[in-house]
Amino acid sequence: NIKHLADIDETDISSLLDHLKEEAITQHGKPLSPSSIADVFQYCAAVTSFLMDDDNEMPRGYPRPQYNYFGDIEFRNISKMEKRTVPIPDCVIDQIYLHLDELM
Image 1 (spheres, rainbow, N blue to C red):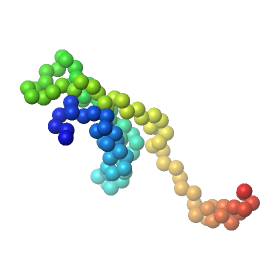
Image 2: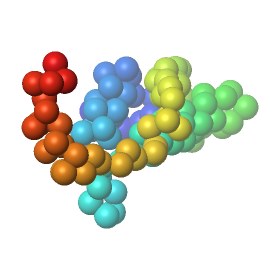
Image 3: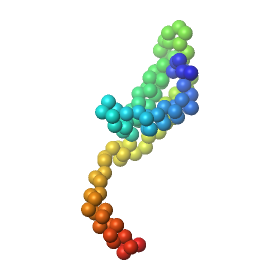
């Protein structure tokens, strides 16, 4: 049960990542893009870092996070995942199937 940012551990991070990849949708009903998921983790890491800084005063009763698990998640090649590929037209696929034995 998470009440404070300090309660979050690596299991929670993994669950959040799975949720964002598999279940979360945009306001238009589409899955979140890899860059949107990376942005969520980047913003959460920034907030956690801010709260971990001893120069920032924490309100009474709120524990200071001791570790920033959001920063452990790496997103590589995000820019290469953004460009959608053009689907192969059905007529091309039909021709491939017609000549599949020749291609093997």
